[in-house]
Image 1 (cartoon, rainbow, N blue to C red):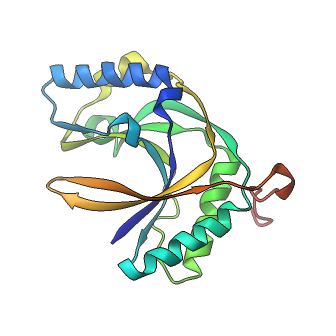
Image 2: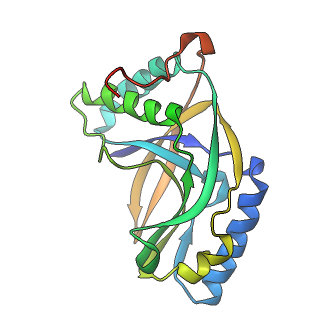
Image 3: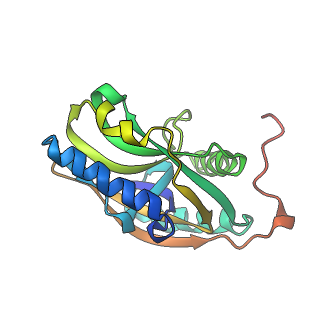
Length: 198
């Protein structure tokens, strides 16, 4: 089974993003684009993807808990709309995320922990982002994005990780939350600092 270790995004704290996402959806609909939109209450920033067996899930949860005990909360800015693989051939609509030291270090620590267990953690150069929608067929989103160029949507306070499972249902994946893992560290713990080799 496929698991995602993610940061939940509290949509109610981001009114500007909610409003922009509604306008984006309306524009895509007017252009008759076939899009599967992520419900705001399910918005999340994926940090690590794991391929595991069902009996490995409890061990994964225990490791996340141990890591989160050392992490204090931190703030993160949600930035402009972007697309994969590119604007002219969009298959996934996303929001870029602030390239913050704490975020990069959190992702690195998670990958290191699970790779030590022999698990594949995905592409190392994959940057975190907030997925908003997926398209069944690639479309040109350049004009759709133009009204929102370089717009920033606000900051969130990151206080926990969530573990999600993913199942392919038709052309789109379906996600389900398995567990929550709150940060219980303090600033004195200083766990989210770059490795000496960075």
